[in-house]
Image (tube, rainbow, N blue to C red; front, side, top):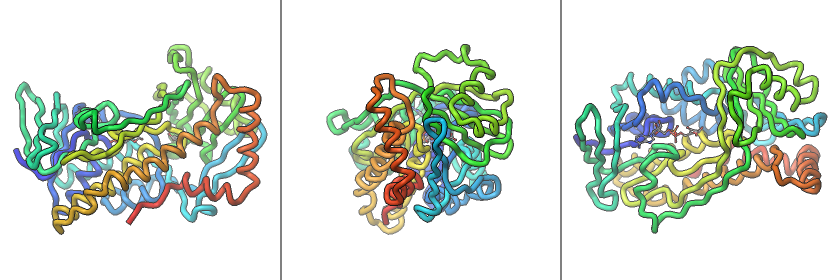
Length: 391
Ligand code: APR
Ligand code: PHB
């Protein structure tokens, strides 16, 4: 088999890339290791920057998002059980945010790929990348007991943090930056109406977040120890702990009910440089991970794909490789912007095991200063709302 672009990984990054290339008349094949049902069942983040909303719209997958997504002006932060501030991105950065779950986006992408006859091969095992340094790379994989080979001009590595693509860049040419955090997030999904806005809490019991998916689906998180066992967290304990981290008026407004999903996610920051080698280009979690605070992971995957689809389109349609040559540097500038911001917001809102009285006061002071200073608020909001894409 032969195709212009092989895309490894059928998560949001890989599917969106194949969709955007298709709309430009460029064919691709997506190779996904898991079964489609597995990919569609994953519960992930749910807040889109406005730049992401525009990319999804102009990729012809914005219809359900525009119908069901919740446009909001920003997010609140409460701390010390009494103070409250609002990150109003519409006011301070000129653009709102959109609450719309990644699970829905993945469904929308699969539906769009199917409607256009896109080729997504699921349960592709042992995917291996070959000759990425040469002019004729190819990818092999196993399916139905046979080994298959696809020749291509380019390979897009969209196979997430645990994928194989990043490892195909020779170790000597790769630099990885990593930070792990001494806690995780215990999250639940419940079929209950969410609060009208997203509210982060920095409480003495740790971080918490009230978020939403749709009018009858809510997402809640509490900071937890890494060794937490889900069996120790029946719903009633989760709700009591969540409420204990909020001021009374917020706690009383939370509508509880049975959880339909419960999981623990560790927090990690990770960036791989460069994001390209030879004819391999990485996008999304394959190249970087941010802690979930600020919900930047999916937004970065979308901006990487925006840059990469533009670069491949310029190559195939105009014979112009300038964007391909600058892809890694350009994508990394935005990645580091979000990596720094997610790390900073994580530090501002969580309780760390080694935190001293001084550190706590400094954290409180930063939140007070953020509510008092228009200049600081503007700087935070323009990052929370998402940095602009480069031309
Ligand atoms: N071969 C083929 N597919 C693979 C392989 C492999 N060796 N390894 C992983 N995959 C698949 C995974 O099964 C998954 O479906 O690649 C896909 C990667 O998808 P994601 O992990 O969702 O990553 P990405 O598409 O970059 O999406 C960005 O945004 O909110 C964040 O972390 C969140 O998933 C999210 C991400
Ligand atoms: C979510 O709804 O999953 C979410 C929202 C905001 C965040 C992180 C996660 O900062």
